[in-house]
Length: 317
Image 1 (cartoon, rainbow, N blue to C red):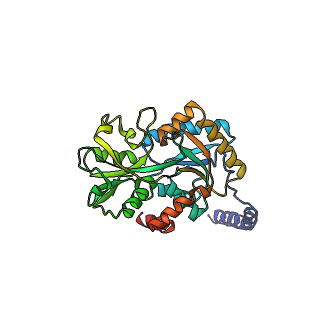
Image 2 (image 1 turned 120 degrees about the horizontal axis):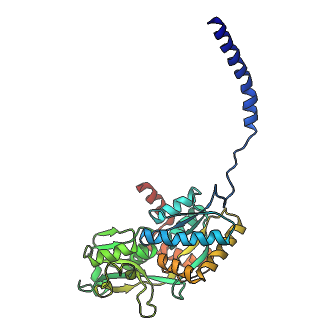
Image 3 (image 1 turned 180 degrees about the horizontal axis):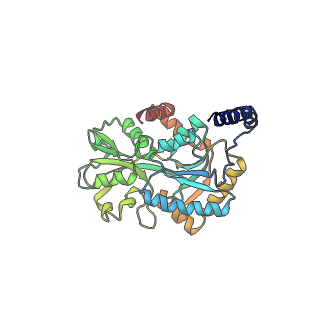
């Protein structure tokens, strides 16, 4: 027994003696994160949930496949719960590229330096408007009829689904009653259709080839008569369309390659259809941050501070 104890002591002393050497060797090692765009560290692309998640998921997989076939990078697609989720992802460097709504971009740009590089085009227009919708049989015919009514909006950070409509209401001196956030444009339309609210606000796009392209088209499968049941009450002023944005610290060559691939994809019938299903997008064009100064001015007039909105939304979680 004494012999075994002696052996254990010798082994323990030998191990202890080796510790400084092992520690010294490890101290010289640096565990470097895999290069962005590799399988271990793919480019993280975010799509905001403007329509049904299944539609976003199917179309985003097509976009991912095209990007991987036309650039030397690997990608991971993510669909967060809200616009704020995308902004926060840029803050924690978990997002590299995103199709972001206009106000979400202003938040991300102010807090984290995110850059707008592309603007979406819908049916030949690089600007868009919001619309107030109401039941055709509900007695709401004009903006003034919204006084004291219950409204559905999309999201506190949605430009067309909240901020633009609220600016119009404020400028017109109209005070609505209760309001709720439905989180998606199609949800707003469905709530109006089902008489859960008196009215609501969503994005507007002009008709094409005699077919409606505004938010009502998103629910035509469930409600084929939505165009007759839900009517446009009022349109807001136009502002620049949503941007596709990039994390500032990304290599410039990588940004250029992704931009060129996205432009190439949307020029194909398959690419146009994918973007159209997700965002009603029919084309993309180059953009800069200055293109969104008009929206910043509108936010100032509305009394909205983009920094405070981000802080308050984080506090709620």
